[in-house]
Image 1: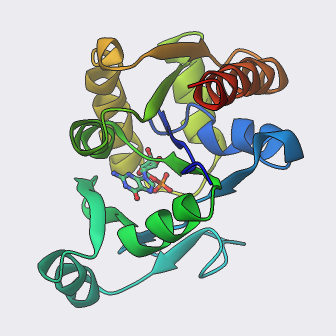
Image 2: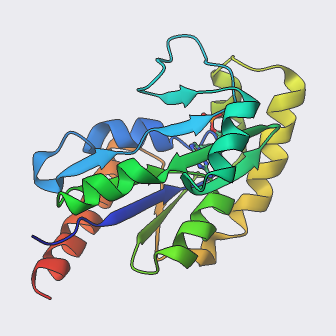
Length: 192
Ligand code: 5GP
């Protein structure tokens, strides 16, 4: 059996990575499984432990780093985020394609460790629209909103690091473009 593909979706906070993902992740032909990350951030309203994230303490996260349990990790606006490696390997060994939805520092680490990963960067139609989306979540104090926005401006400069760039003007359209990218890569892999 062929090993599953590793798909990285990255892009600034608030660009709609999660919203776009919801449109394509259930498509059976993609054979795609979302890798749940670990974070020290507190859950937002409605977020479920083990599904949206594994919510852990700083001590637990640092222990996971020490034990080499993470494929990548990064500090983002005061919290740690990382990808548990064992689940990614298990799923790929079973032939499933694995989706990572991560920020840019983590994406860079994965690209270095797994050069055959398919990397997709989602950009917003404009910075004004990005700000509107971040504020629309209404979940964070002004200081954090400002930090996320200034981080986003820096992250957008790293667009060249990615193989594919998709603009999220309309989430359904962005999702169908991503679906096409993944399907084409599955086809290429099958014909190797
Ligand atoms: P949020 O707090 O909005 O859920 O996530 C903040 C940022 O961290 C987002 O850009 C999100 O994609 C990213 N992120 C989520 N999980 C991971 C992860 O496992 N590793 C890295 N490097 N970034 C992550």
